[in-house]
Length: 251
Image 1 (cartoon, rainbow, N blue to C red):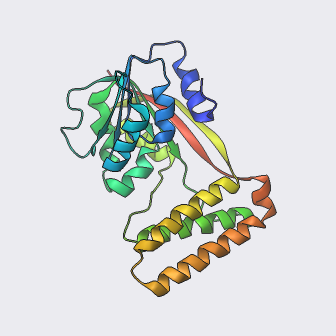
Image 2 (image 1 turned 120 degrees about the horizontal axis):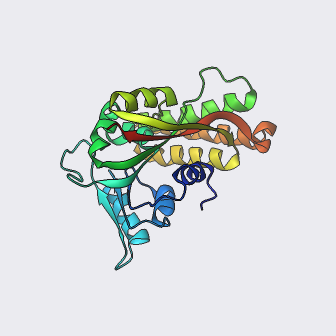
């Protein structure tokens, strides 16, 4: 049993049932650590990033093991054609798709439907509210905005999360029945801030203007200094929610 609250909710919903064949439809090290440890008959993981696929194979696909990692886009109709899984996990898949498969989010649950032989679990992040109502939340919003700006100026698409209600509408429209919809309050601390600022800083090498690159670097450093002295962040900023949705294809 994982200690991650979201994966724990999936375990509790799944109960004592067999896991069978499991698909991690938008994989990364975090989700694949959980998937590869399940008492499943087999598992398969998909990522649109070939370099990440190679790294995950090296880390998780031991010789003679029962798991595999594939690189591909769900926009490709041949990806996993004819394969059916007892459990399908879409762990922050929607948010990542804006980076690699923009404008396909409204089709992803229809695209996944032939692969769903049992239950589909969707994990996502509710987008931050437009009007932060505390200094700590305002600072978090500025950090996330700076991260997204760095991606955009570097010529990449930032991640974009979708609300739980939007996801539920898409699932129902794609022919699923929802049997679980649960939210979990988020608490953001120093680690989150450091990660977001580091991710943003890594994009600066791709910014074509040296003046703009230096200005962004200075801005990111300033945000880091403000975060280090913000008492609200030291205690943990409570803002927004993650969610888990479980759905099955309607008969």
